[in-house]
Image 1: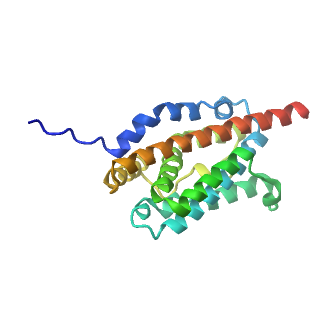
Image 2: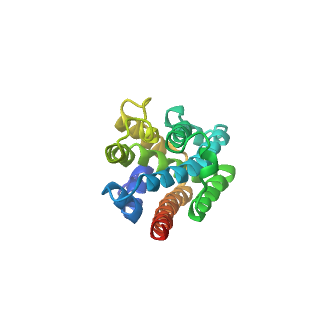
Image 3: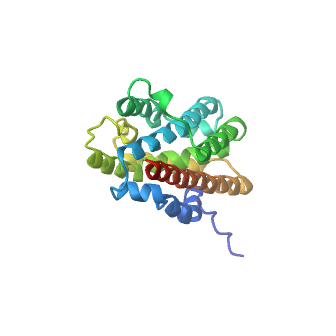
Amino acid sequence: MSASPAPIPLSALIRERSAGAHSTSEGAGFMASLLRGERSREDYIALVAQHHAIYSALEGGARRMRRDPVAARFLSERLTRLPALEADLEFLLGPAWRDEIAPLPATARYVRRIEEVAATWPGGFVAHHYTRYLGDLSGGLHIGRVVARQFGFDTNGIGFYIFGDIADPAAFKDHYRAELDAAPWDDAERVRVVAEVLDAYRFNTEVFVELAADRDQDFSAA
């Protein structure tokens, strides 16, 4: 009698199932046009403002999840983005930046979902945490370099994309994926976590689509 095949590691399963969603999110019109140099400084500021809302929810959830024995394995102060985002917004908009930003409806929906899973479901929180931070440590580093060239930034304005405390992003991501593979979740929970990763990509894509529509409307009305 042959042995049952070993289960696919969760990190590999997520990569396999989310490949299409990842490509869709990366190719969403706003980000594609930003990276082609077709967006203004004001467009970039609007993106930073949406990130501020998203990471406020994510890092607020992380504080609550420190008490969960599984979710806590994924948390690291080296990933924290909110102080950098706030410094970026102060550089870009000035000291009264909080009065000048607001989440789009798509961002508000994304934030509500993060807050919901952070309050009720560790696996769902990890799904959103994984989707954001491992993306930041991958394509996000490239985005930061492109934006710096386009708008003449040094480090001010792109601090969000600079992980000064992570000397080896590839090694950090490998460790994170190993924690995913070691998480004590049964098959049903693994399915739920993968589905939530797909939802996280969908939320992210919806933010990009709405951001493009909002900024293009502002431009045409100017």
